[in-house]
Figure (cartoon, rainbow, N blue to C red):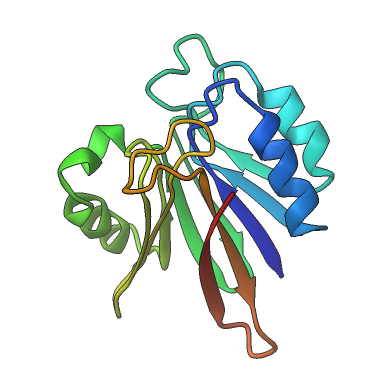
Length: 159
C-alpha cells in the first residue's frame, strides 16, 4: 500500500498536482487540512480514496475537524492539529492519539515536516506544499508505504 500524505495547500494546488505525477499511482491520499475550498480538485486528481479534514483556514468547509480510518493494519487519527497546540510541539497530540487507541496520528498546521516514531504512536506531519516554514523552505510531503509484512515506512520528500 502506498499513501501520499499532504497538508496546508491553501488553495494553491499546482505543487499537489506535481507531486501526484512524481509519486505515481497511490492507493490513498491523506490531506491534513487547510484545503480552502479545493476539496473537489484534490479528490478528482487523486484517482483513489481521499481522507481529508478541515484546518484552521477552512472557515466554511463541511469537512470534519477530525477523522479516524484504517490504513492497512494501522488505526489512523487525522486532525489538522491546531486544537492540540502542535505549534508548541506534538506531545499533547500524541497523548491524545494513544488515549484513543490509535497507531498513527497525521496532522498539519505547522508547515514543518515531521515523522516521529515511538513505540506507542507514530506522529506524521507532511509539512506544507505551498508555504513551507522549515529550514530551506522546500515544499514537502510524506509517502507512507507498507511492506509485505504490513509494516509502515515513512519518507519525507521535497519538491
